Image 1 (tube, rainbow, N blue to C red):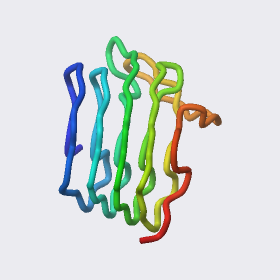
Image 2 (image 1 turned 90 degrees about the vertical axis):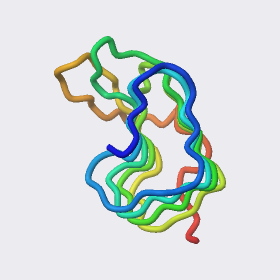
Image 3 (image 1 turned 120 degrees about the horizontal axis):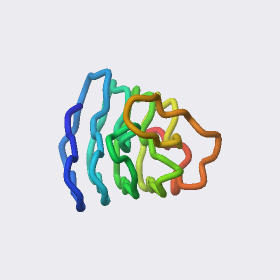
Length: 131
């Protein structure tokens, strides 16, 4: 993981980017909002994952993405529906992005967080325009 948000509160990631990795670019462990603006992500597993199985897990954790450029990314945003997480993605473009947003059921430590079939809290772009 390139960026780990441990504490509660809001964080801004503005500019820059990341290339090549099998984990998350941003792991959000605390509560609050992560804003990602003018960022590039290439050849990654995920841009963002709200904590799937933290000790004393809960939320909400929110993600706001604007003007992202993505290429060859499996998942941009993974959020926990049952904790009230919301991901909003707008003004972004890319190619080779398998999925923009996936909702999960967040759980307590020691188990795997299952995917859910809804996208109620995945807002904004469902796909990315090619840049």
